[in-house]
Image (tube, rainbow, N blue to C red; front, side, top):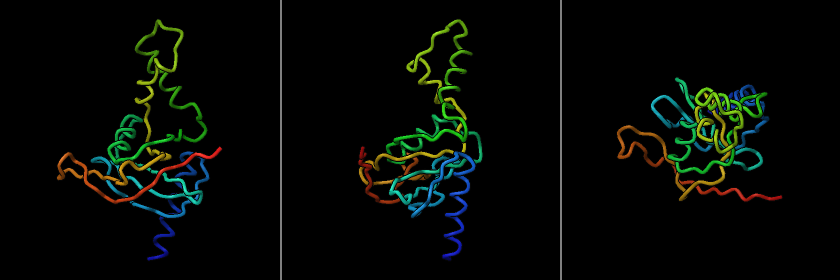
Length: 163
């Protein structure tokens, strides 16, 4: 049982390193493989630096907008969405590309212009740094529950930024 848990942690760390290039050290898995949609599962964990993170993997295509919606419905507040490895400006690049395809005549593009188009970026798997757990409750997707979401765990967390 303990070996299985350690194997899952090592596997998660390797997946994160391969997909995002982030050297994240998992300290404790809070929830493992909870559903966040019909095709996506999430693992919520604390790093050794006591940061709460969510790793989401889907069996089908997933967009940044889908991830943002899932994070919100889980009762979490995101601080940062990690871009894929080696593409620091990935969401901006995709946003500009999608905006330009819709408005080919516009040459000057601002951040406000592409905000919606960033949400159309393909994002599977996803890694999200969490700022806080709203109301101390984490929810998971459940098609049988009222509103399609039910309480998975009571967990208090708020990240306090220091310099």
